[in-house]
Amino acid sequence: MTILRIEEDPEEPDELDDAGEEIGQFEHYRFVADQGQGLLRIDKFLVNRMEGTSRNRVQAAADAGSIFVNGVPVKSNYRIKPGEEVTIMLDYPRHELKIIPENIPLNVVFEDQELMIINKPAGLVVHPGHGNYSGTLVNGLVYKYQNLELYGGNDPRPGLVHRIDKNTSGLLVVAKTELAKINLALQFFNKTTKRKYVALVWGNLATDEGTIEGNIGRSTKNRQVFTVFPDGESGKPAVTHYRVIERLGYVNLVECVLETGRTHQIRVHMKHIGHPLFNDDVYGGDRILKGTTFAKYKQFVENCFNMIPGQALHAKILGFIHPVTKEEMIFDSELPENLEQLVDKWRNYISNRDLE
Image (cartoon, rainbow, N blue to C red):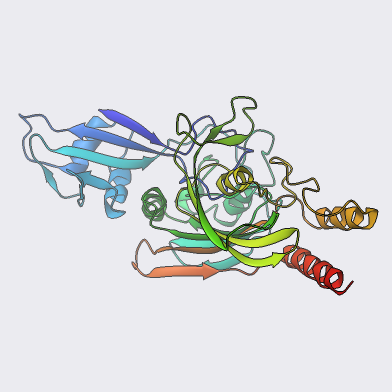
């Protein structure tokens, strides 16, 4: 049996969330049926070989399309044959961590029996861990759904299939059933979801659009931050497409489309090409990087920094296939008020400067 852990960085501390992000914590199991194997239902075959895994969980995985025989998805009543290769994707076992239900207001954009879409405000941590054991999105979800089976344990990531940084605002899809969680996680893993972000970055980009490629991994100098390894000798492949939406003198408003979901991907890639995100205190965007030396300008930028809690980044568009109806669902969210006001402030500054 082979077990492959599917996560963007197994050592990643929980306070360092992704830019667009990870697929949740899942494992791939791989088995090859013995040559003497008689015909046997695949759910029974897997339960016999996976200690501590219930038949219900295996059947839910089959319903979600995450059991494969020789690379082809099968249902739970499929009968396994000698020599066939079986792979299955399952959620990690529950963690020993007490999740306290908390009545945290959630901005719910859409909800049905299988999932919900949340527009997360900047400043809200997604899940508990490393000093953030309360006041997180998960604490609010457990309070809201404490009667649902998926939220009845002490899993610090119930229903999560991806995440965004604490100080990044925007759209998250959250599963309400085991089937939805596995199915959605597969979509993120297979990179079939649609994700677009809007960011305010320092500097005037040389081209209206472009693609940034470069492996992303932990910095060898500081394990708390990530960096690009351009020669590919380390890290994991990452691709970000960008398009300039509006040029505002010393800053640009850009749209970023993720082809991969590495930790801090947009923030790291934009820094790599010399355009850190505005007010990003981890990657150098919280300093005046472009502009004049006048005291009036310095005060203007400081006032801008104070308008937002961290990097100017918003997860604007999220698209996926509904795990049950198979309908394509695409959600679009407006910039949060403080970020919109920040952009307006730069517009006004540039307009007034041009008149001088």
